[in-house]
Image 1: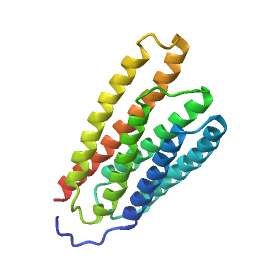
Image 2 (image 1 turned 180 degrees about the vertical axis):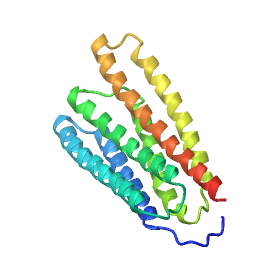
Image 3 (image 1 turned 120 degrees about the vertical axis):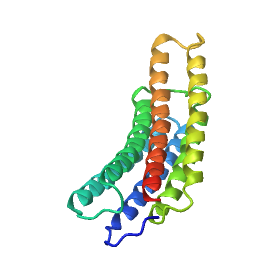
Length: 206
């Protein structure tokens, strides 16, 4: 790590950790959704909406701190990129839950549970990684594993699409379900964006 002669604003580390912890909350709500019925799904959607609002607040706090800080722990564009990508994850997860409720989906297709399991694991890894931004230690395995999970998510997504287009579902149902699985895939992509940003930061700081 580069030796610095100037002090740095350290509250960013805590805010990134809080944002990642909130994503873990969101992933747990996605897991709850799998076994829930209609009324329970609506209640889960309300809790997910609250978590998404908390994520927005965390992102805005990071941006405010960034705009008011003269010295930052790493490059400003990387702080912005990391905060934005973390926020994207939460947005996509909330959108997926909201679509399930709005479309009144009775049964999610087989394979969605695998998508959500991948997201839950990526959320755990991301939350574990954020505190390591302070030292930039022990992060390599994190971004390698998240990239592996994203590749796994791609495979699951392709199989889901093949399943949706096998003729079992009517056209309207296909459109609804495809939008949901596509948004979950976007969440997986956003986790990879976070991991790639962390790798970029670590390389710059090495």
